[in-house]
Image (cartoon, rainbow, N blue to C red; front, side):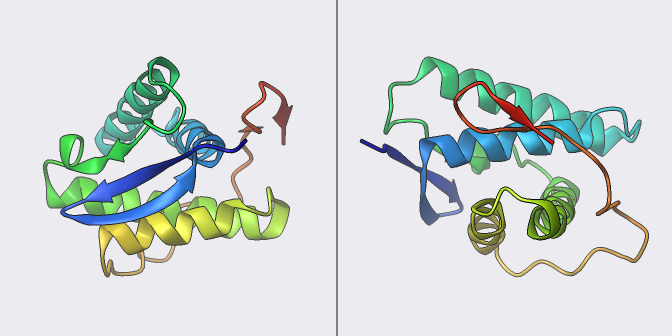
Length: 137
């Protein structure tokens, strides 16, 4: 049986599988790791907190409530840019479910501007966890 939890921000909600939320948080954390920017360090830390939260909650109750983490508009914009970069990469290299999950997260964030050209690296390589502890690149 697949369990589902919510991504939520400012009252907007989308239902996602628990495994998809786990993969998304892991991929975003990997994307942010080592970038050296202050907002990248914030995103890496936030993703780690999301992963820890999801690991301690029972299935179906692993909601990702972004209001807790996004306290400045710069963080919202940076998260949207990171999600777009991950989405672009996933469209080319998988996993196949991740672009739709990214689209749902972007919808919850609301209409965000496209990142400036060169602001994010869509060809970055990262590890993807499939929710079962296996890694694919």
